[in-house]
Image 1 (tube, helix red, strand yellow):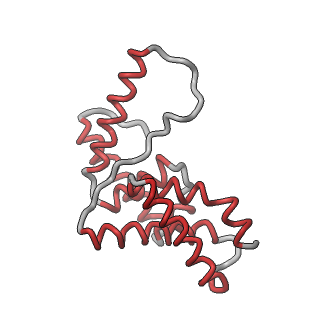
Image 2 (image 1 turned 90 degrees about the vertical axis):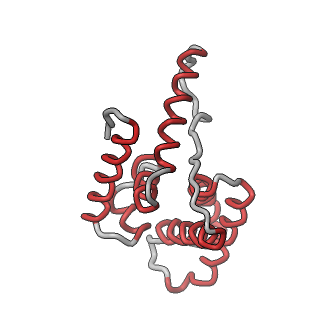
Length: 163
């Protein structure tokens, strides 16, 4: 697969993931470009079929390096309010926004490994194996970390959590 084809297929996925982590559109654009530039440099060492996992892992590392340099760990994820949904009343919309805000504020307070696994598994909808590939963890660690993260999140929110 050429770099152009790979970019066409995955640039929005990588951009969105970086935006989840950084909450900065310009920085997410820059890091998306840097991720694909690094892919071009390391292309020969990447296994066929593992390109997307490699791209996500590289994007994640770029975001973490940025935060390490800034000594700032902050997370304000992207709300998926842009998706088409059935019309709702203004009251329902306001309630949804308040619930989402409370959820994302609670996620922001989680330690970084918990944030990672929640973003990848619950927000991005990756499979356990895909999450393993991105984070470089084994299946047991992904499952256990997600279980612990959801328990802490549930405790922070003071209610039940549907997994």
